[in-house]
Length: 488
Image 1 (cartoon, rainbow, N blue to C red):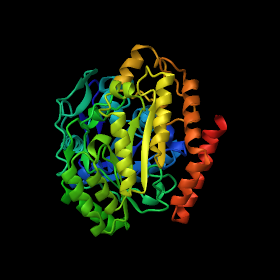
Image 2: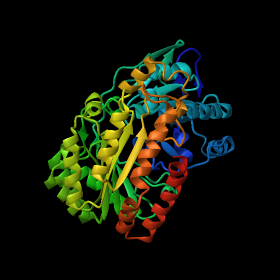
Image 3: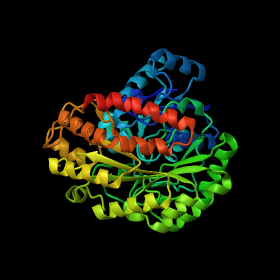
Image 4: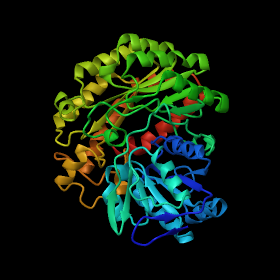
């Protein structure tokens, strides 16, 4: 195998071994963040295995991120191609890993994929020369085409959906259409032991120590235009739905192979298409699914849907509220009113769904004022969600927030590893009216006033039905006290 200098024409022997890697980021050590099976690269693994390639998945979110450990895995598997999946906070770790790999064999082909290279393709290939090739957006069709070209000793220049170098110049291949979600093979979940993920919850209040959890993407894309979100760039604004039959067939595999009794639907807005929702969830109890989780948008739910979710085992629904200020909601293009938020929570809580969550962001609009924060705190207490998530804005590349904050100089010198959804320390940026330290103080104050009181604690304890749940919430309370209460 060789890489010809000055371009990206690669040659490789015919037996293909590819290691697909999820790269650790700075959230790895945070006890408050969730941990999921690497579904994105499990999809890629299945697509590559359809071509009879030999595939391993290495997940350095749960495996040791150490050079000696990587060297041992390289020695055992001897991959010819390495695919690195990196979110923004992981891109420098991905570069370090590529360096370790190139030290072992400089001819191993390193392919970078994931959200960071998708939203900043030219910058990524310019700043990280250890990446030989980049895959932008979804890779289930692009990666197999790359491997086929390599297997046939043909060049990989110009493949649709890639970013590459030719004669030292970074170039983008033609845009590739998003794949048909009903034609993609089910993700291979047998390449990394499920028990490696037991130490972290999958989502707030959803623990593998209580449930045998199976994550599922039943659709891709999101129709909304929230200014702090980059899902549109990675998966498109048009929602691509898998058929209920297709989704239920994948879940049936989970029941058969892993004893699955809980489904975590990862869809950005599961509740968008009512008729499909009703049909899909009706099939879950028949498969032996005892509980499931969905993300909802307050504009897309009604009483009939929520009651049907509760009837079919919906254990938790989460709504992204973001702010209690209508001015802020309008500016971030949330496409929701405060009254619609109130009504959605009222209907969800009265439907019988055990856990209704609300998530909020301080600084979702970087012009927020103390009055806006106070409105958020008032609405939060009015809604009385069973669980709340309260974060400080993270201006991810590919979003309007990123562009605005960058133009103001607020992101100058900020390392990529800081772009984390939740940090236990102040972020290295501010918003117009608040410093980083003031944002953390506001977050901790609101969190403490909501959660660290008798009423909330009593209601959570009253809802507990299993010892595993009690132990889970006790552990989260201990961490919450350490991170939030003690620092308020």
